[in-house]
Length: 102
Image (cartoon, rainbow, N blue to C red; front, side, top):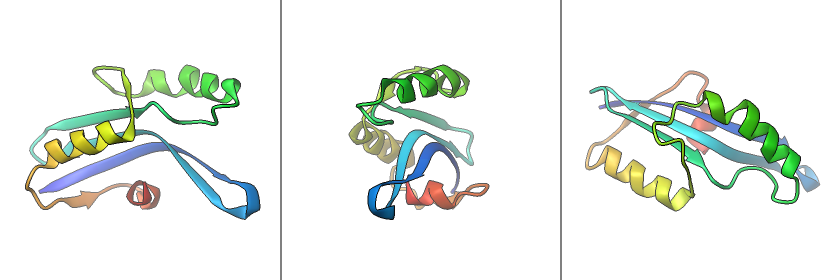
């Protein structure tokens, strides 16, 4: 089955020139119409409250999440596993290079 994927993330070059990809949200839509929306509870540097505040003010409100709740990545893994089940997914996305990395 086809699964359409989209994510919101923060990409920056960190110390030593190493890339840092910080996931904010993930959306999965199955070909059969089922939808899964997840928001991370761990984005942004913990020592920079302005950073997280900006994301919460400008990004989170426009995300489509029925619950509007933030969860850790272990919860994400469980929910994605339940969503996909035993299916062998065929991933689709628009400019999805980072979606696959995440």
